[in-house]
Amino acid sequence: MYLMNLVVNGLQNSEKAKKLKEVIMNIEGVSNVQIFPPDRMKISYNPSKVYPGKLKAAMSSLGISASPGG
Image (cartoon, rainbow, N blue to C red):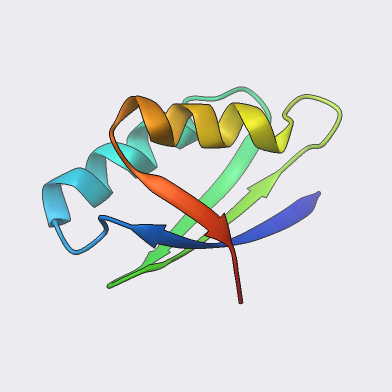
């Protein structure tokens, strides 16, 4: 399992954060999503099934931008 830590713009909106978690969890190979408002997110995933670009594309589809971060 890999762990991706992200700084995410747009997590202040609880409905958007909830939808983001749902969308990311529905990607095959993602095992856990943790959201830490206002702007942090951790995603645990299997790198043989998921690549970071796929996760970021899912975020972009919701109008959310992310960058690597602590």
